Each structure stands twice: as structure tokens, then as C-alpha cells.
Amino acid sequence: MLYAIISQDVENSLEKRKSARADHLARLNELKNQGRLILAGPHPAVDSNEPGEAGFTGSLVVAEFDSLDAAQTWADADPYIAAGVYAQVTVKPFKLVLP
Image (cartoon, rainbow, N blue to C red):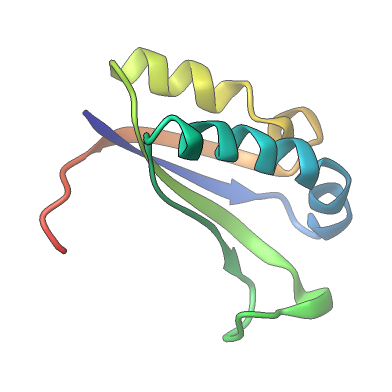
């Protein structure tokens, strides 16, 4: 089943994001290589794909996991959590309708 992992950043998270980005992306690439990643990306703090120093306000990952518990366990191990990037992470089932 698919699950949405919706993360909210702490204030001024950009430097923390930069420090953990390589490890964060490596985990996402593992999901991609396993054919389980549907989409992933951050939410820019301003209306721009390249927000510069404004940074980001959170992230969205939609991926396939065996269960809600498995998705939550994966989300809890995100390097962004260890680096203090995320203030809150919500994991919930997701039903893909389109495309």
C-alpha cells in the first residue's frame, strides 16, 4: 500500500537540511531503486523552485510500504529527524487516483 509521509520543518532549517541532505537522499534513492518511491520533494518557503536562503518548510514522500507501521518506522529513521530538521512528521495511508 502507498503511504504519504508529510513533514514540517523547524524554523530556519536550511543549514540543518544541508548537513543531512546526502544521507536523506540516499535513503530516498534506495526506495526508488526498489521501485517503491512514487514521489518525493520539499516544500519551498517561497513561491519558487529555487527558494535560496528562504529555504523550505517541509517535505512530502509518497512510497510503498508493507504497512503503516513499516512506513512509520522508515520515516522515524530519516536523517533529517536526527539532524533536527523536522518539527513534526505525519504518516498516513495514501490512495493514488490520478494519474
